[in-house]
Length: 390
Image 1 (cartoon, rainbow, N blue to C red):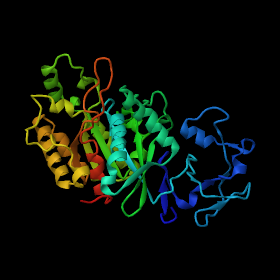
Image 2 (tube, rainbow, N blue to C red):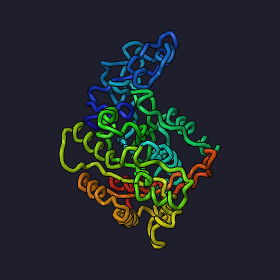
Image 3 (cartoon, rainbow, N blue to C red):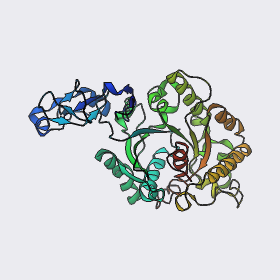
Image 4 (cartoon, rainbow, N blue to C red):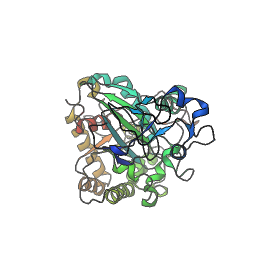
């Protein structure tokens, strides 16, 4: 951390110089119940309530670190627990903190994408001589409670809380932090924040996620293909009993794109093309593959299994998939969206995936999770960030 001039907190997404970092004592003395102190900032950002929950070990605000340790001005012991000066969350002890923005409309499949992506990375990232582990016990428990147990039981993942229930979107839906260690033993902390889709419906609400998006190293924009009128009509024609969203009742993908661009420009006080790599991923692609009217040609790269974990990263596969999706979007009357994306971002690639392999049945049960190409957007971003190569 000392090698970097500034830090972005993976919880509240505020950016501050390293000289502003403060510390929390980790000694047995300061951890005793009678010595704990109330911490209003931590409670506010983490949506913690109750007098007992607000009591934390002593905070050292004037410590000068030496070899990563500072001396507690209360008990005299040394600690290396660095915390954010804004929200008092513990800062990761890694070489770099990388925020991956995952944005999209309500019911676009963001939660399923995060859950199955983490499952795939945990099981298969070793193919790149990389390892993954959860940064904190809290993150591991969040993954187990929200995703792993529900996948095993075959029940739906609970919906992410919208801002109407709690305007502190970070405290209501804390991010999951994972440490990825590459083949050179460099460790990086990745922040996956699953914000409710309602946060992206208009600029007024998006101000709550502006720091999160603007400080991102990469953005994954998830879109539901049934938001496209041509696709929605074709699926309804083939299966009138299929439950589909009404495109008129949900925010359009064009609006989400426009709001995202506007918020980034306003928050960073910039203009022109955005340099943050953008992966545009269409979820629920099993609906397209199972549709006689919409299914791509049998020679399509999209229909083939993802090659990256088995053959090493293949950028040509990402490029082929992207070109095919652009062609489908043009056929579906969405060429203006494609042009707008490319005019607004310097690095763009289109993807298609299915997070669970099928839709929930009439009783709401979810089949065995069989993800297809769910890892492709993230692996492409790792390649763009120089973390994995062919």
